Image 1 (cartoon, one colour):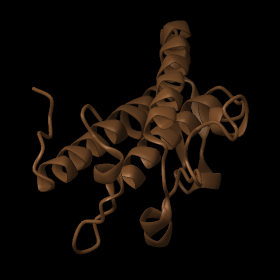
Image 2 (cartoon, helix red, strand yellow):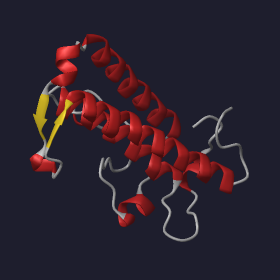
Image 3 (cartoon, helix red, strand yellow):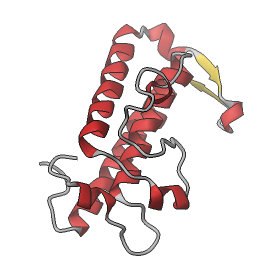
Image 4 (cartoon, helix red, strand yellow):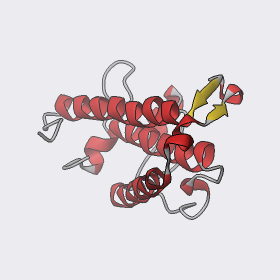
Length: 150
């Protein structure tokens, strides 16, 4: 998100691609949901200590095309929320043991069957953020700015 302006965040690309703001919100809110609700068993930050403070007009971890075209963010405030999500993730990861990573969770309510904590972290958190980083980089590049920071 380095160097992204509010205008760039809300720019609507051609076709069916989502605006950068929607992609960023999806990445952050999904991490928040996965870590704080699914894995830790609590409430996501956006529904607890960060409620009404995320800078996001409508927090949706699972996006729809309509939502993606309408969501708005206050970039500095949303970046602060993202830092809080990442800090919560780091704190959670620091507590995990090998046994914790092997713990099986029933995610059939989400249509995902059974997964271990390690698989959830690898696929649903790290892999997902990696994918969203690529999408954000493309959206920055389409607007004539540098995508990946390296």
